[in-house]
Length: 604
Image 1 (tube, rainbow, N blue to C red):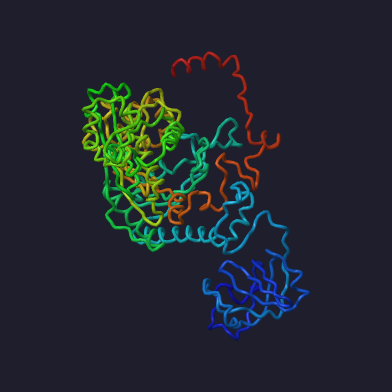
Image 2: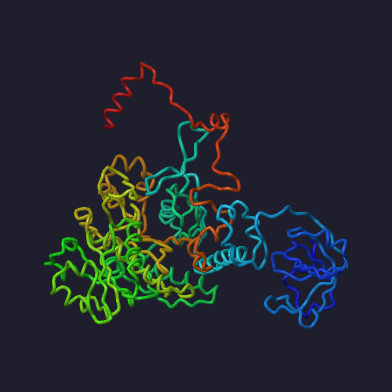
């Protein structure tokens, strides 16, 4: 090794030792004839003292150097107790420049905490410099510890880590696949996995019983600030398990992970049904760091003269002290709501003397005005916001309003963690938005995925009542973030085909696309279930960072572009030919035409 010690490991007990260090010049301070440098390596920093002016003038920030010197006590008054090496310094006897550095695109320093003035594009383009700061490097080290503690626990209870394929058959699981041309089979393509879902189920059929993997997954999605085209998840599957077994396992994994930052999760983690989550909090991933529930006013306004409230659902959320907001702030709330797809955000102001004012107060009946405070538990000085329309969309708007109120009132504490399991999700949902991907020719698609089992008590009727059928699916939520999801899986081929049919996938298409899974189910598939946890989001919560880009070694921008390597990039004509990207099947010979026509007619 080119060094005898790590820079960040030196202490008062090392005084008098001759050491050899190697690393980067971090900061420098000149004091006329003597210069002080912070030498940085992966362990931290140590102050070095150089008396040779000729050498001092050669050194610049981020030069890579090797120094030999004696560990000494810093003079009285020069200690820096904010860092572990703050009581010592190294009096340099010899220094060697191992490599120089050009002028940096932005400041790099071990203790630099804020980079708000640096654009995300620049940070991603020079990520290798971004990672030289303590906070960014520590996040990757934290992620490594998360991996280690998870593997240690799962291995200790009999799980087997298995790597599943990353070149697979494209199957309609939800989002778009990333496709890879198969050079040896022109015109055919692999897909990169959106999850190891089908392979982990096959491992249960194989009798492995307890499987896990820290898996790389890929989804070709439209731009979203909190998404990456490639991501990592902890994938867990176990046989002969019920929902409670999987949740108990998830509780223990999360408890051990959060212990890494000194936070104790109280287990078992609470549970709430999907229906209650929407009714009380307007979200299937509720933030429970604060209460403030939605109020259902549908019956209260059932005879209202106000046309806007003559809707399938009317709900409200109270903003404590909200009446003190100026009129322009209430106007800003309208714009905030429109940015989220709503027409606006109706409101009533409850003045300090109890009078109700605002646009809504003028349109509802006197009886409705007189009872509104009691119906919503509002007090003088509060504001009441309303959502009206179809139940799900109105509740979702109120749920977002609930969180925005908490954010503006400053009651969201990043040091507090509120976990909850959301259970009893609908099995299907109607396809009706741009975000929904119809798998077949049906108005129904799966809420979780097509391999989620119906609730046991609905097994006989779920396909007769898809609008009301519930699934054995569950999500784990932290601070309003879905950090994992799973379900008990279908292990019976006939049940799986019934689910496919609701989604518009006929038996023939099911056999073509999922025949390998249906065949496996014929050979003794055990009941099984599992969960996948989003590793990027979990580490982001642990690190208290708002962007998952900060927890990924080399992230991409939201558009999927990598400004560092300039990927994705065009390929050469030769590469296109070799990969068969432009392959076109040869026209069928005339003698084969009748046969092919007959086959086609049979398929139709």
